[in-house]
Structure formats: C-alpha cells, structure tokens
Image 1 (cartoon, rainbow, N blue to C red):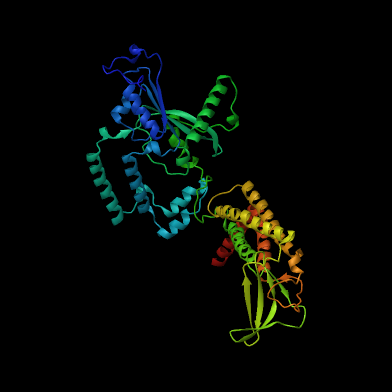
Image 2: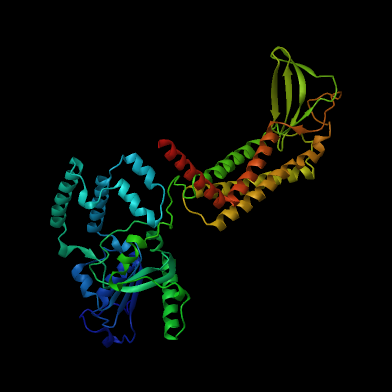
Length: 493
C-alpha cells in the first residue's frame, strides 16, 4: 500500500517509479468508497480509472460528481433502489403516496380489496378510473389542502436545510442498464446500456425487481450478456432475441418508456396476501392439503390408530375410583398402545395410553416400514403444502402446479403405506402386558387414528388431482361467474 500513496508534494506518481495503471472498483457502498478513493488518488495517477457498480445516490456532491466525470463511470441496473437514495427522492415519494390517498374516491376498504388482486395491462387503466380521481380532478377536501400546505412547507424547509447545490449525487458519468421488453409486452433476457445525465434517476420506483437489480450476482450475469451480445454483433452473429425485437422509441428516455404506461406488465405478479391470481379455485386444494396434513400428523401419532376387540365373552374386571371397568379392546399405534375400558356404571369408554411399548414387544419390518413412510409423508407434505399456499398469493406457472401435483401423489402413496401396520405381528399376537391370559383379541381394524389417516390419503389425492387441472378449474370458475352475472342481470331486468 505504501507504493500507492501519492507523493506529499503532489507530484506525478510516475516520477516516483510507479509504472503501472491504477483502477478502483466496487459494488454498492464499496462503489462509493472506490469513487472517493479515485478522486483522492487521481492527482497522483492521472490515468486512473474508477468503475462504480450500483453506487449509493448520496456518494458525492454535485460539484464533486461533475469533477469525476473524466475518470469515474457509475453503472446502475434497472430499478435499483440504492442509486436513488436521496433525500429529495424520498420527499417526492412520500407526497406522491399521500396524493394517491387523496385521489381515492371509494371507501378505503373497497380500494384495498380491489388492489390486492393483480390485473392485466388492458384492465389497469379502467380499474384505476373506478377507484381514483384523475390528478386534474382531485377534490379540494380538507385532507388534500393539508397535504398541499405540508408539501409547500417541506419544500421551503428542505431547500433551506439542503440547498440544491449542496445535495448529493451519483459520482461520474452514469450508464443505465435497462431491462428490455419485447413487442409482446414480456421482458426478454437482454439489458441495454444507455448514458444517463447526472440529473436523472430522480424517482423511486418500488417493485420486486428493486432488490434483485442490486444483486452482484445478477450484475455479473447482465454484464456477461451485454459483452456476449457486443461480440456477436461485431462478428455479424444475430442475437437470440432477433425474432422478438425490443420496443424502444427514444433511447434517451428508455427507462421511462419501458417502465410506464401500457408497457408495464402486470403479469409479473407481486406477492399479494390472499390475492388469488388463479381465482378462488386455488383455495380448494390448499385447504385440502392443510386438512390432510393435520389429519395425518394427529392420526399417525395417536395410540388409537387401530383397535383389537375381545374375541371371547370373558372380560377383565378392575376397580378404579370405585367404578367397575370391563376391557373393551386394545388400541395400537405406531409408537404407543392403549387399553380401552368400559365403565359399566355410566356406560362410558375410557382409553388409557401407554407411551412406551414393553421391552418384550419388538418391532417387525412392517411396523418399521409403516413408521418410515408416515414420517416421509409428513416431511414431504409440509413444504408442498406451503408452496401450494403461495398460489393464493402469487402467480405460479403450469409446470409448478404439475410438480406440486406429482409431489402430492407421492405423499398420498407414502401415507397409504402406513397401513402396512395391518400386516405386522402386533395385529395378530395376543402377547400384551396388562391383559390376562384368558383374554383373546381379534385382528386389527380401523379406529379413530386410522380413519383420520385414511381421510388424509383421500384429501392428499383430491388436492393432487385439482392441482394438476388447476387451469381448467379456473376456466370453469370464470364461466360460472359469467353465468351468475348474466343471471343477476336478467333478474334485474
């Protein structure tokens, strides 16, 4: 590092034996530091270059940013939020939000219910007209007057505490990498670089891409793609996206053209809680999987999974709290067992579970398989249930639904394998403690736990079928809604 330190007299570093070029680079906060170091070392290294990737918007003053234009180049990706971090930008964002609240012409709860559901571009303008006043027709309510008064006061105070000439900016020249969009309205795998003025990027665009555009990994992929396209163009090789040309009219306003108006694709779904972008039909398999998971979790772990009733007329009498009890049967579970007693005085059945099996009762291969498959069903079923729940909050592809359906079929098979327990020796042997020798037991048959497990198998399977045909179910739901609308309209006439 001592070789990089500029001479104290401010002379040229090359006169001190420095025969190499110096380049500073960094990402995010490191990009801002790289730009500052570049300014510090530039007098000693006139050929110095600095490449700042996604630097903070508050890295340099306007005067310093202009002084760095000859040797500092800042690269900004798409809607990256970090290069837009300026006090003036967030002041503007706040008053735009408050103004939108003033433009709402329907009850707020109705507006909230409406905006939770994404809509396509062709319906976006019509939907906004239903719930918002135009900017030129905002009613002069007391709330709107307070907003305007606050905005004027804040503008005056903000200019006093932060004069325009002292505000911070992005250092050097700015290259904006714009995510290109095809004529069909969908984004393509291409970013186009454009020079931006130092006065650009004055608005904060809140979207899910804001954090992704700041990712270093994403930046490397974008730069490699741009370099590849440049090399192909120099060799006369056409690009992959030649059949889907980019719709750009004015290169100077590329960012504004791509991210405003009808070009914005609402099919890039947001995560909206209970937005149900696939329709209400997606709730059915979701609720089925939730019910199936809890039925399997409870049924597989109870001591009353199966029951073996008495095979003879003799009963075992005992006295508990002054009541005469008859043995009604023996209940079995994957991990425990129990004895069901019948209180003859009040005609009530009581189950006494034992959490630990006796040492002389060994687990055969069927029980081990039943336990393994039951655990596997829950381990796979839980993440599948969570992922299917996302279909009610965001848009999933048809391939994703098919993968969920296949996973649910596997869960159904694993859950059904739990019934291998019926083939185990425990369902046929009479060697159990706490039972007299004269008591004979019948073979296992279904009890409350196994009925819950069987119900979970049915629900897993139904959810798999519905998930596999979710697109057709959505079409049917739309047709039913249309028929209901026609019926209501006919009834009103």
